[in-house]
Length: 177
Image (cartoon, rainbow, N blue to C red):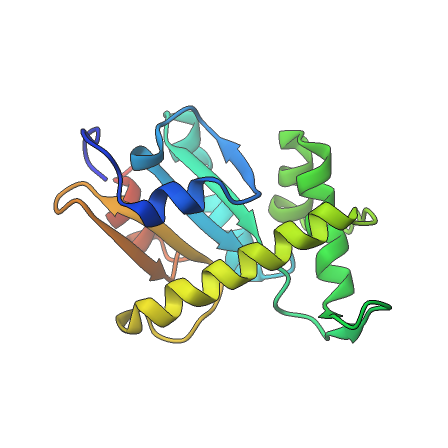
């Protein structure tokens, strides 16, 4: 992501930019790293904590929550959802305050909020898109979190990668802090 992207980002970047999540920074879609995460994932927490310097230095990251890691239970409308993951993700999405992202993801505080109907739909849309991205990117391996979608400024191609808890992967995308 060295430099600033000029031009129109690919449609996949434009679509993911519209998913429900929490944006840090003011970069355009082509200059944003989109990270899919589950608030209970220790690797996601390591990725979040490892990006703090990058964000302070001006990087733009949009954190897109999914609820993948827990046990799915039936809901009255016949959906099978990870209720705890939904409640933790709802805390981040429905409060809109960076302190909640820090507390729930960065510090693993178990702050749960009952998800509104629209929030549940947003989280399901996030999960569907993440699944589609992995299906379209067989070189990315098995679907998992944290996963980052970003525009490779060297090639102009959208890339999906995992392993963001590793400093070398974060530095490959965001540069050295």
